[in-house]
Length: 417
Image 1 (tube, rainbow, N blue to C red):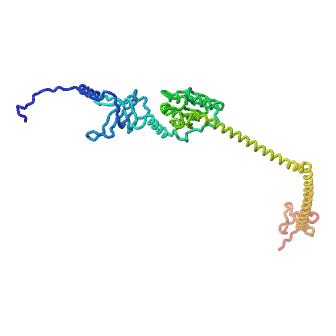
Image 2 (spheres, helix red, strand yellow):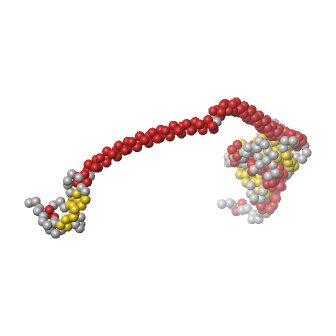
Image 3 (cartoon, one colour):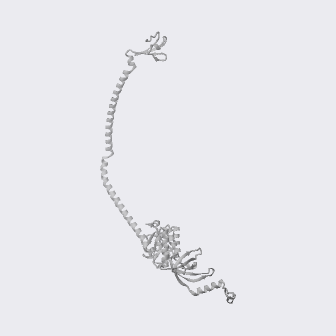
């Protein structure tokens, strides 16, 4: 226990309000960071709510707090600041963020209000290019199996490019005189360029204005060519029912449109040359085939003409009069052979018939009767009498002899005992 002389006076301390504490903290923080600054870190907990804002944390890769936990700085990247962001913020990506340190009084939290984000070690456009390329490749938009063949002899060629510039001049000058050229002018760089290119591709397809499309522009910086790295252009090319030739920049310039297109040309001029060269090649092949066909037909006709002489000689031998005489001699010979065969057949059948008649004559009952035998029938049934016991006196009998019939009446019957 404290001695009585040490009893503390009962003094009521002056308390600060929450608002006063928060205001002092804000003043300290904003006084420490009076202007926007660059902060380096690793992205974590990236989220994209429907509001269009992007929320994430910047994590220090090396330093930790006294408890060994990684140091984290909350960040808010509001929609009005992030709408021109070219690449997607993903966890683990190392970045440089430019912004202002502010306090979020209602939560008693400080944060970095981000105004700009740059990837560390790689340009923003290059990172955006690689991210979109990887995603579209995973969807199969670059697969050769889905790409359409370029028609070898198109009637109409659609050109989607800027109304001015060297690209349109080079393309039209090469295509003129070979195809019907339909020009669809669009912006090819700057705000809204990608949307115009995508809408032009869809519009041309909806009206089926061409048999093949050339989409592109002349050379320029990465920023100048960026419209052809936008996802909207890539998907418009992918859904096009008209085959698309991508012709953007120079030989070493590769864009997302080049990967999705049915065919990539190194320059707009090369795209036009490709179609013209293909047409010329097919025409040359057609002329060669026609000439070979004419040569074959001429050779065939010469061969047939040579064979006609032989056929004429054969026709002389095959004249109808000669053929008729030959057929007549053949018919007479056949008639003679036929008559000879018929006489031979008749003689053989006559001999066979006589032999059969002789055998029948020998077996005929009449022949037996001619030797003195007779046949007696009991009347009126005409039953042959073979036993005397079967007749009775008074019955009528009919006796058949070799020449005629005798009718008699039984006066007595003497059966054999």
